[in-house]
Length: 92
Image 1 (tube, rainbow, N blue to C red):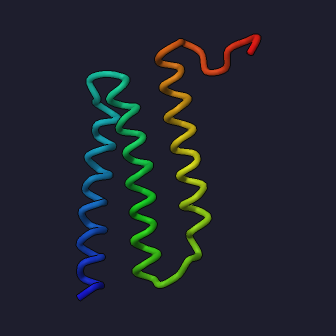
Image 2: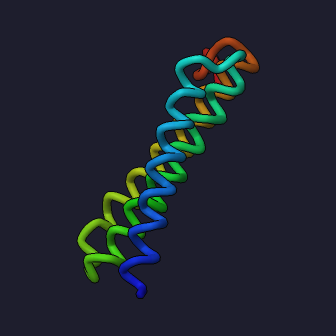
């Protein structure tokens, strides 16, 4: 029963990833694309978490941590670039 629920969750998350990827490609504005990229990062973390539960292992925990950090930093950098035009300001 649990295996079936996890498989259904993986399928739903795969569909979500496809829809978010479409939003990144044809998003009407840059903030929509940034938000979709952040949502892709969060969804991938959940996807890998479900795979870890399904395989009964913690091997991918480093991957989840690294992906979470990269998604956060990427979203922060893109948002700062969108707001100010630069990511790293000279003189600071």
